[in-house]
Structure formats: C-alpha cells, structure tokens
Amino acid sequence: MKKISESAVRRLSLYLRFLQEAAATGAETISSGELARRGGTTSAQVRKDLSLFGSFGKRGMGYSVRELLREIRSILGLTRPWHVAVVGAGRLGSALSSFRDFEARGFDIRAVFDADPAKIGQSWGGLTVLPDEAMDRTLREQNVDIAIVAVPAEAAQGVVDRVVAAGVRAVLNFAPARLRVPRGVTLRNVDVTLELEGLSFALVNGKA
Amino acid sequence: MKKISESAVRRLSLYLRFLQEAAATGAETISSGELARRGGTTSAQVRKDLSLFGSFGKRGMGYSVRELLREIRSILGLTRPWHVAVVGAGRLGSALSSFRDFEARGFDIRAVFDADPAKIGQSWGGLTVLPDEAMDRTLREQNVDIAIVAVPAEAAQGVVDRVVAAGVRAVLNFAPARLRVPRGVTLRNVDVTLELEGLSFALVNGKA
DNA sequence: GGATGTGAATGTCTTCACAGCT
DNA sequence: AGCTGTGAAGACATTCACATCC
Image 1 (cartoon, chains in turn blue, yellow, green, orange):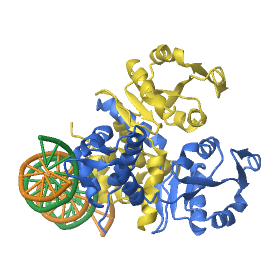
Image 2 (tube, rainbow over the protein chains, first blue to last red):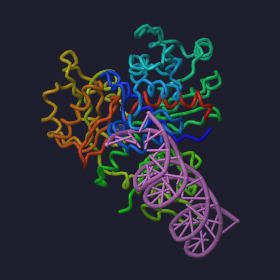
Image 3 (cartoon, helix red, strand yellow):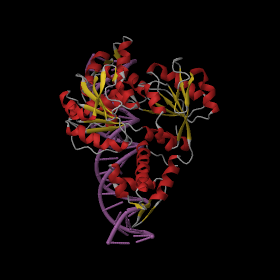
Image 4 (cartoon, rainbow over the protein chains, first blue to last red):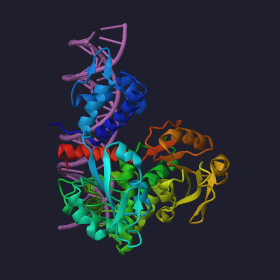
C-alpha cells in the first residue's frame, strides 16, 4: 500500500466532517469543488486525496454523500468503536473526559486514571477516577486502544512507557514534552504552547 | 523576507524548549546533532532551520545555549509578553485559563468570557469570568493580541468574527469547526477529534 | 455538459555532502 | 578533528490540464 501523508489523513478527517454536515442537510451528492471550498483547499487536492484509496465519484455527478461517508469512515478505521483511556484527571483531563462529542464519533472513554488520592473515586458522567496502580490491569481488561496523556510534562514519559507496556498502540499526548515510543506505536502531540508561539511568530512577521 | 514554513516554526518552538532544558542543566553550548536527537529530526534539518534566520553557531563548537535562546526568542516574537483572552468558560476554557505555564512563557491571560449567566462572576486564579457583552470593549481596553476560542462549534464563527472586529489578529481555535478569518488574521486550530481519527487511521493501517 | 481521475509539471521541503571556520 | 552553513540533489506534495466517462 502507498504511503499516505499525515496531511492527507487530516484532510480526510475534514472531508468526513463536511460530509456529515452535508448529510444533515439532506444533500445526496457533493462535488470535489464543494468539499474543497469548505476545507480551504482545491478540488484537485480533494480528488487526489480520494484517489489514493479508490474511485468513489461519478463523472459529471460528483460523489454520493452517503457512499463517500461510508468509504472515508472505512479508510479512517471508524467502522468500529475504539476504546480510549485518559491518564491524568486534572482540569484538562476532566475536560477531555467529559467531551460527549468523542463518544458520538466512536471513541469510547472507558477509564480515567490519576495518582492524586484526592481525585480518586470522584465520578464524572458515569466514569470513576481510578488510581494509578489500577492502570496496567484496567488497560488490558478494557482492551484500551488509545491513551490520552494529560499529566504534567515530567510524568509524561513514565506514563507513556506504562501504557505501551500494557499493549496500547496509539497515544495522544497533551503534555508539553517530546515523548519516545517504540516502533509500532503511534504518537500524536497536542501542544498548546507551540501553537501560541506559532501565532506569536505570525504576529511579529505580519503573515496572514 | 523568505517564506518560512509552518513546520519550520514548529521546530523552532521545539528547539527553544530544548534550549531551556539545556540551560537549566547549566550547559554552555549545544550542537545541531543534540537538538536533532531531542526533536526527532536530523542535524541538517536543524542547521537549515536556523540558517533561515542567520548564522548563530561556531564551527567546531556548536551553538551557545544562551545566545541561541535569545535569537530564537527574538525570531518567534517572544521578547515581549502577549495579551491573551479566552472565550468560553466551559471545562476546556477553564482548563486553559488556569494553565500557569502560559504566563511563564509570556502569554498573559487578561480576560475570560462566557455567555452563560451561571458562569459570569466566577473567579479562577485572579480572573473573573466576564459576560459576553463586555467582550468587544474589554478586548480593546486590554489590547488583546490573541484570542483562544473554546466555545461550541456552532458559536465559534460568530465569536471569531467579533474578536476580529475588535482588533485581534491571532486566533487559536479549539472548536471542531473550520473558521473563516480575513486576510491579515492568523488562525490555528487544535482539533482533538481530528487527532483521534489520525490515530485510528494509523491503528488500522499498522503504521508506526 | 459537467465533474471525475490521473499523468505530467511544478513547487516545496528534506537530506546529502562537502567546503570552510575554529 | 569537529561542527557549522549551504548549494545541489532528492523526495515529497500540490497544482495543472485534459482525456474519460456519466
């Protein structure tokens, strides 16, 4: 299989969202031009992205919204729910754990962990904060696929090592730290400070 | 001035963080190879990135940690503090507002807004949640440079239009929506669902 | 007619490799 | 010797443009 760039995958996620919006308005078909307009890209880009996986459109017609929804869901692996755990029940972890939007998109939060005794046992929306020591066992029992790391930077590498040892193969890291993961484990970072610094750069350089 | 890619700016932010860590350990100099190792890139990449802005190193020696810190701070526009406002005092907004790390890096949160009467007047760490109606005036009075949008997707475009009208030229959007901003305004998105879907893709495709 | 799918052309970013300082 | 700075080469991503098909 061809190598797919991260930016292409990001765009597919966006197209998926636009398709859901279009479906909600009852649209039957959608053109590459319309997807491009919403995504701030070009129609050629949209067609190239989709052509990496197949030929889903009808010439002269565009794409069937329902069909393309199904295809992109399948490409992105969203045909079955994923099991997610949140490590760190601070403000950020609690915000993420309570995001009902995730469930709607097939990411089921199965557990929340924290090391702070004061937080353990608290419950948010059906989830009880579990102690650190229960982590390894629970990750396996719940067949957790994706771990969200929302702990302080100093603790992040230790956490990721443990979740990887417990069989988790995908990690979304919110800690401002560059983590090491073994081959076969996928890591993505959300680094708010980095984004702010990017905005700072744009401000002083007058770039749009 | 040359066009600098977003990925180059991201890497500069990372180098800055590594330099701060190195400075904390008392290191005097650092090589491109060492920065590359920490950042998961190559030494040639590091040198190219830095060479876009000048020649900061000494051959055979590497870079002076203190000097390079100063240069990168200057490049990124971090020599003066930026004024930040958070719009949306839900769980995510509250988590972001209380991130003390931002202040340390020169991003001063000057105001938090919400439309919900139940939240207005609550105070978090010296900040009082202000009502929606006070937003336009306060953004100008506080000379806010950067707005963080942490409201539901449906409300996000309205919010960004208002902050832009109030003179804000940089926006960090956490809402899962693609926002339109006029030329001259920089927008960055943090889209957690997108990241999760990217991990899902990696899981089903066995990519590391 | 109208929009897709795709080789070819272009543009951008990364890596190579080596001359040039220290 | 060691490490930077940088043209040149290579890899990768985007855009063009048009034949193809509904």
